[in-house]
Amino acid sequence: MGFPNEKTDISAASAYGQEVVGIPEKAAKDKPEKPIKPSKKNIKKKKGFIYSWTFKVILISLVMTAFFSLLSEMTMTVSHGVVIVLIILFLIIAGIFFDAIGVAVTSCDLGPLTAMASKKVKAAKMAIKLVNNAEKVASFCSDVIGDIFGIISGACIVALAARIVAVTNAEERILTIVLSCLTAAATIGGKSYVKGLAIRRSKDFVMFAARIINVFKKEK
Image 1 (cartoon, helix red, strand yellow):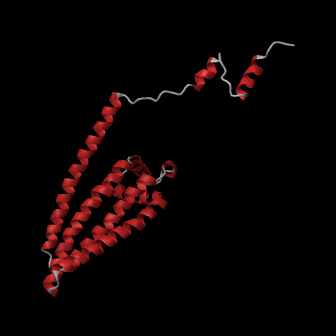
Image 2 (image 1 turned 45 degrees about the horizontal axis):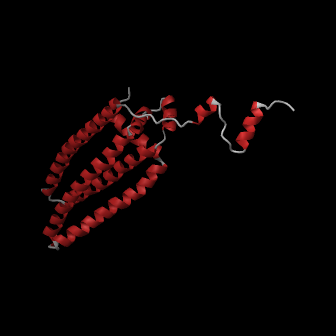
């Protein structure tokens, strides 16, 4: 009859679910790690970033709204309804496109873009910047541009209804409602279709947007 083996006792105790005492290494491993709390400096930095971005969005929204409001006022004086229709179509298509870009940057994988950048593909670096700033890009494209274009298209619909009423003597309220419904249906239907396409082909959408930006801002 020999002395009890320490390894045998430990394995036997583990097999029966008994707690093994006197093994500091195992006990240290079993202790749950304490969650790392963010420092006050990082919290302040994050809040400052949020406030700064919010202020920029408000400023950009004011400038763009003023510009497109001036454009809508100009449409009020346009005698040809065809011009107003073209402006409404432009706003619908542009709103759908910007919304698709906002969806694409949030669902795009950086791997293929990084590989393209290593091969020195044009606009790949800009595409990486867009994806790295997906939160800002999505907020600007989907929220800021989408809301502004929606407001301006409403003003254009009122102008178009007024032109049609002047020619046909139709009921202005009914005509405005019909035009608003058609515009909303085209916008919502277009966005729902293009969103699915933007998720499936997010890389192509992001690269397309990056190439357009590169026309005005060259990569370093």
